[in-house]
Every structure is written in C-alpha cells, then in structure tokens.
Image (cartoon, rainbow, N blue to C red):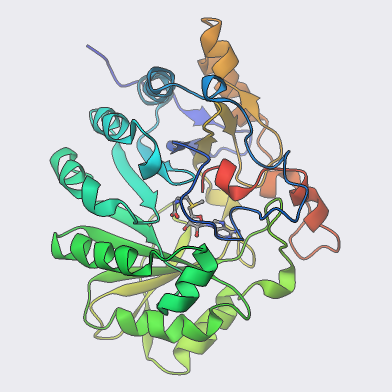
Length: 340
Ligand code: SAM
C-alpha cells in the first residue's frame, strides 16, 4: 500500500514542482517543421538518437513516474511526445498511469485518437489536448507533410460528441496561419471547444526568429477587432490567458511563452523518452535518471538537485528578443525529442 508523501519539489525561487510531463517517444507520424527539424539543418544533436534499449522501457517509465507521484509530490501527469499514441505500449502505459492518484492529461496530434477514446473514458482521462494548426485541409497537410486532416478533424468531432473536454493547440506563425486566427475563434461559437494559440517558440532546427512570432497582443488585437471578448479566470500555474467571445459556447486562450512568459509560476518538470529530466522547456541542461535507475540508485535526491539548479527564467538563456539568442536554442534539443 502506497502513501502519498508531503514532500515537495521546491526550487530556490520557492516554486513547487508538482506537474510532470512524460514523453512517450521522440517519434511522430506528422512532420511539422517547427517541431521536427527537416534534413537541411545540422540536427543530430537535437534529435534523440539513442537506440531502443537506451530509451526507457515501460517498466522503467512507470517506476520513475511512481517515484515522482508517491515520493516527490507530483499531482498532475501529462503524456506527450513526439506522438504518444504511436508508442507500441501506449495503451498499457496509459492504463497503468491511470491507476496513479494524479490528474492525467494527454497532448496528441489526434490521428489515432478514436482508438484510445474508450480507454480514456475507462480511466477517467476526460480532457484531451489536440494539435491543429490550420482549419484549411491543404494547409494542414502541407504543415504536417501528411494527408491526415480529415482524420484529425473527425477525431476532434468524435471526442466532443463523446463528452471529452477538447482543447485545440494551434501554433500561431507569421505568414503561415495568422490569417486563420478568427476562423479558429469562430469555431468556438457553437461548439464546446477550447482553442489555445501558442506563440511560436525556438528549438533546435526550427528556424525560429522573433519576427515569425505572432504575439499575444497581435492575436488579441485581431480577435478584438471582430468580436466582443471577455477575460476568464486562469488556474494558478496556468500557462494560458483565457478568454471567451461573449455568448460563444467555447473559449480561446493564448500561451504567451515568448512575449509574456510565465516562468515565475512554473511548476513543470519534463521526462524525456531517453530518461533525462529537464527542469525547463528551454534549458539545455539535462539530468540523467535512467542511468541512476539502472544502477539501482535512489532518483529522488537527483531530481531534487535538478530542481534546485533551475534558473529563474528560460533555462538561464537571455531574453527571446536578444540578438543572436537563436544560437543558444540550436545547442539544445528539437521539440519533438523534448516532449511538448
Ligand atoms: N504529438 C503531440 C501533438 O502533436 O500534440 C504532442 C507533442 S507536441 C511537441 C506538443 C505541442 O507542442 C503541440 O501542440 C505542438 O504544436 C507544440 N509545439 C511544438 N513545437 C512548437 C514550437 N516550436 N512552438 C510552439 N509550440 C510548439
């Protein structure tokens, strides 16, 4: 019989870390350029190139998750990737994680969602984040380099029909999809759907430039020029700034990681598929839990040290607008191998 600990993972700035994001895999069936670098950039260091045996097995992943929950006070786990639903043992892992006394959530591209909805219902995972950057089929297919628009769209409809709380993640990018911001908002008129516009973030190989970001302010200005909007309350530690168009059924929000970051309330820690923890999405520093686990060592003090080493903001990297800051992100991982 396990007991929940009162232990808290606190950093030197007093932030308590109780939210673990677990990457099931660094592979994805979609190939969005901002997440998975194409072959034209020197990306070997950015992608997780370890062999299958160097990645966490299902038993190892569950053992680490269990320590986080029962020994380190983690209260929420988000399953992510790469695309988590393409991992061979995804069904088993999700079912097992569903047994932990945590709030369990998932971020998926939605392509295989229909196969997993019955399991999600069974374990009470009723909130699903689905990524969709365009409502125009040809554009979506171009961004993802696939022909999966219809499948993703129909799976979104299915999840809503089945009573899931559906959040849509759309990365807002200049000259790519910024002209669709109000189409996404219009989608929330009659559907209980929650669109979240994410500011385009820099990671290795994704050719990020500050000028390509559609900012929180620009997003709001666009929406407010058409719709009467109201601010909604955000949960403590939330990454979103939420709004609703008056009388619309759904909501929209902005994840303003670039222009209005939320580092001071950050409660998140990430576990990569090769067993490293990252104390910040933007940090290039990683701590190896897998080797410790394989040697039979206690991982708790290792995690504690990693949290104590957390920087105040952006993993210690200079402000996003600083000239030449992109080169710092080039030294790190691509988003696909971090786990978004
Ligand atoms: N495969 C899943 C999916 O598509 O949602 C989960 C992993 S994906 C890395 C998680 C989220 O990160 C997605 O919503 C994706 O759009 C977002 N993302 C990836 N790269 C990003 C970037 N450079 N800037 C902002 N968001 C990004």
